[in-house]
Length: 228
Length: 228
Image 1 (spheres, each protein chain N blue to C red):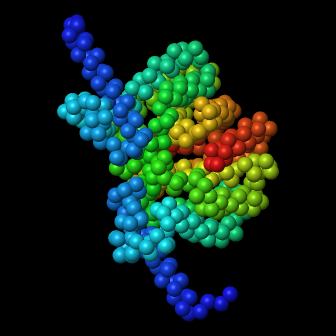
Image 2 (cartoon, rainbow over the protein chains, first blue to last red):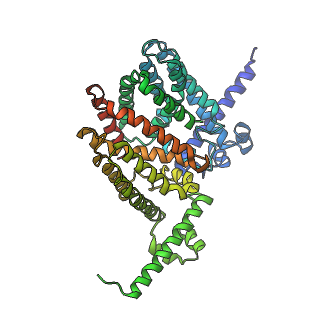
């Protein structure tokens, strides 16, 4: 229940070492690529003993997973208050996407290397891997919260249940577009998102029509399945 | 205008060497990754002198570009007769996607490595790179042919002009899904395509309504822009 000063100091020293190792790893991923980066190399560049580096992160994959988790926790912290401000479905979905992009922004210079490594058959850092499921669950829970908390523009239960999985995959595709978006402040990504949300505003009401509802439902299920 | 027998024999020997180098490169990409594969290594494994290998392909990138071009030329050959059989817009779009997947099928074991390398900041083999534009133009021309040749289910001119670019990006996303689809014969990809086409059949007529038309048009333009 109570931490002594010595405990607090140990914790903060440990947090600083972890942050140092992460920053060094990010730089190395960008400079020489994910495959060519090793835990030994990271330790040596960070001026940390190899034993100490392995104590904090047994593998490169662990290090990346902590980074994913950290970004998604900050995403949740940034999105939650904004979701308190509106009960409109499309505005709530937009809030989750926009805060997500804002939290990713500092990582833009590293993004193409991450995408490439995440899709490599030799890495476990895919956002759809088992190892990445804690970070993934934060984001899908955010989308679920955005959908279930909507009062205006809400959807029938079956569509509302299938939507968060599809929105999560939309988030991955948006992040993919963003990673290669070289426009100033990634303004093309912001525009793509705005247009996508405008289209969602027009089409979501149509999805309630009996004609379209079944097809939309099946497509949402299938898209969500792609993210499993 | 006329080739002598000696010319023909040289051509066929040259074609065999190029095919051997390509097959060897594919195997090496899969076994050790794109980055770790070198032209020297390919030559040595193929039993071809380094000078001869460089004569055929100055770089790994050239070799991959020939492969892209080859697959897309076979895609055009497979799609064109099918497009002669139907004047329905959605059936025509489906024919281009289905023949495209069929031509890709033999490369499925190599696909994740290709996707990863194509998205790496260290390679030029992205399907959206300048180097890949000849292969890309074959595919976008196929989609344009599918759209302009439709009699039933046709679209207003502005939507018809914007659609092929969006369909091409759909093709890349479908190929991305397919690359990581481990279901037997990639049946999940086939199902995703079927559902997507069913949704297109329901929604394309709606895109003609004044309410939706402007938004759809803007989205198509923006999606097509993402592929440039």
